[in-house]
Image (cartoon, rainbow, N blue to C red; front, side):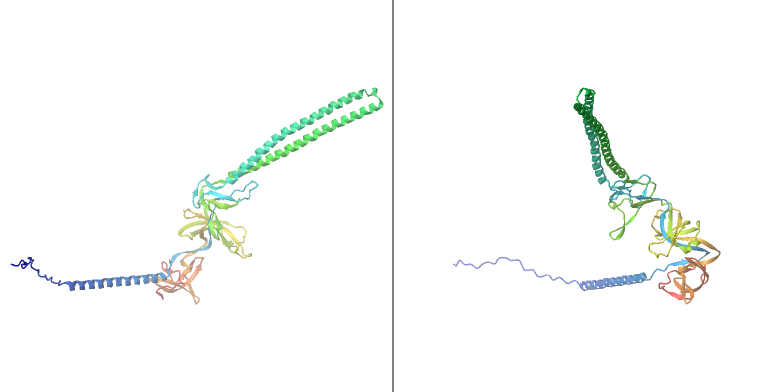
Length: 452
């Protein structure tokens, strides 16, 4: 029997049939909606971008059109005024300057150590300026050592003079004793020979001359000692005064305000441009550093031509405006007219001006010194009322006067008949009624201007 048998196959699982998944029916519909949505977004974005671009163009066009300033005609008496331009200053103020020094080094430059900031309110007695005095204090110590040395020299020299004078007086006493001795010998000269008598007489004369000379030397020595002591005393006094002057100058390095007010630091020219004095700057003795002004005593300081001085009278009222703050308006009064004409450095030598001062009534924190201002000084008033408009609204053409009157949102060119005027206003006899608006900047292109 053969040992090889036919192999029995291993049982296997039956093969599974592939399952067919049907394709979604709405796939084409989703693609269509995606495309249409994208197109819609692009369309909305395009419309928004176009509208933004159009708005920007319109804004640029509006910005290019100049703003039209207008003024209303009003019925009032025409006041004859004169307009002067100047700057605001304070009537009550004190100058804060670097002290003029009394010491020999009085012209040396000084450094600002501390100062009140400009624009701050300070009280009377408050420190507003302090100069660095360290170098002066070091020098005072040096000079003080000279004073001590000079005083020591005086004491030392007094002792030396006393010793020298005592030695000289001892020589005088010796000479006096020798003179007394020879005088006694001379009383017995009759008992001596003629030669001895002659020698004794010579000894007396010699002793007398020596004693007399020593007495004179004592007088001369005393005078010399007195002169020497005077020189030493003068030296001591010189050093003492030098030290005391520095001490006095050191007290002036601290400056206090003598009144309540506003601190206004003075300008300087630094690095090719205008600036104000600051801490650390080097200043010179006598230099003006700041002013303490009373902000409630402001004025307008201006100059007028000497030919116009006859129009001004002290006490005339004025309307004051500040260029930096157009909304501020003050009343004022002319209180000072200069008696002599002065010359400005930027004008010809034959041109003279008269300084005038207009006191400002009222107070405002914004009103500070060195602001450009204008004052309308009233010099007369007409008896009858008239329609008044600013002179800047009048347009001259071919010998006629015109204005651009506002009508709705448009401006119409209208001929007017003018009358009396002052520096700022002009009376209209016909063509404009009370309450109508007129354009001021007629020289610029006006939109939608039509002729009447």
